[in-house]
Length: 98
Image (cartoon, rainbow, N blue to C red; front, side, top):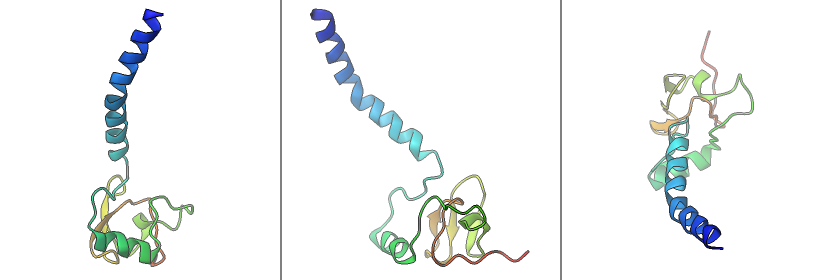
C-alpha cells in the first residue's frame, strides 16, 4: 500500500510541471494569439479569424494582407498588424496575385 501511495504523491507533485511543459510545447507551434489586447481579440472575432483553415488554398500565408514567413507567425493588415498564423484564415481573405 505504501508504494501506491508514494506513486500517487510523486505523480501529483509532478503534474504541474507536466502541464507547464505541455503548454510551452504548444506555444512553439503556429499558435500566434498568445497575450493579445482586448482590441485585437475583438477584431479577430469580428473578422471570423481562426488559427487553422480547413481549405489549403484559403489561408493567411496566401493572403494579400499577410506579411511574414510560412513557418512562423506573421502579421495581418486587416487585424491591425496583429500576429497571425500562416495556416489561419478570416472572412477578409484575398488571394495574393500570381
